[in-house]
Length: 559
Image: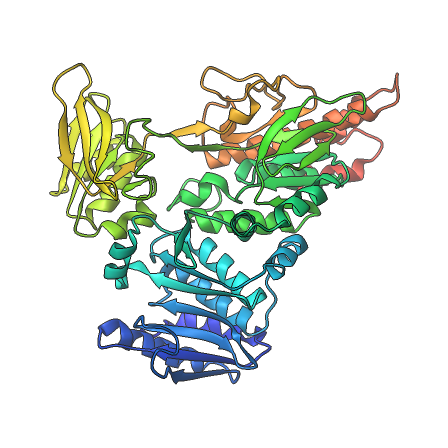
């Protein structure tokens, strides 16, 4: 399969970043995909003088076919292997692998790079992915980078749809799914910093403790943002533009945006997708002097003491201090809380139809939820699986009428209204059925399914705030005023984690900027000498041209 003219031109231009000769070693079989891979690799090898292509000898690159290895000629141990065709969402992974094996530097913070190079021993990772999975490239690219940075680590990427027998044998029912030295390592989106922390725990290393100690030694921030979604990114950018010391703690950059396939209501951007927007947000943050702490989550917060510093505890054991804090930890998928749901997570229970749908090709699945997310999931899945059963608790679906009309037009979809899910049934290894009953009472029935896609909304990520003094609503959301201020002085909040009524990307972006400007205003007021008039300073912070330093105003006015 040859690249179209546009992609070929882009790739050829990017290959000018190669610094070392790279060899493509390929293995084929009789399947049509092998012919497509041969055509693709031949085209790529012809794009640059530093690229060559040859066929593998025997099992030189393993037994999987079709497959190919990208390896550095001067150091063949610097390599990554792809089993399948890394196109679709994985095309960027292919491009980065070519460049990084070819000597282009891996772009990560210095702490993460050092931790990757410090991994001891020999380790082989295998990642199972699908070309429609928007979360898979993050894992694939992270492990590819680790293999390039550390000669003791190797990585093979397997396209699940081409190796169904292996996927079934390994019990892979959600992607991305990672194996380490033949054992399950994890599933779902993970960045390099998270992978390194988990690897450190498994191997008994001390890297995590050392990293936590180093984090705790960092100087206090003027503004510390917790969360890397739209609200957190916006807050960090607005704070950094004021020239104050800004930090951002993110478990994964982009948050729930990463799980959104299509975005068509972001004003000024007619169409994009979640992973693209998440990457754009991170790229924008990197344009400013923001101390980005990735792979970390907050576990507690302590009100400012006499020194005026708020302390944020991290799950890793580290502690960070700041004169003001912006909570933008977002939300996560709501679960059903029924027997079998946790037991069969990633064994048939999943939350991402775009990622995991292809793994259920030709099978029967259930979708829980009749809102927009549930109906959109059912529509997408209907084109891949044999049959979809939508189970909705209410007596009517809440999805937009246009979506309901589309759903009703599909011949392989049934809708069960007024039903309560009571159990996810399985055989110990995988899901076999969904047990549900009439909401108002009656006999339960079991619908035979191979997969259950849960689409019943989001929960705010605020458990870590219980007992902290930050006021929470009955739904667990952070209570904020119109300035984003919480019940704790110097602590603000923004986005889906708050009581802001509309959980939209554009709303979160605005929330983040509001919280950052409010935090800046708080810093001005709390740092002013006793008896000083802060009116002018406040107007400057709000974008009003009244003030002693009007040159500061255009920063906000232009954005």
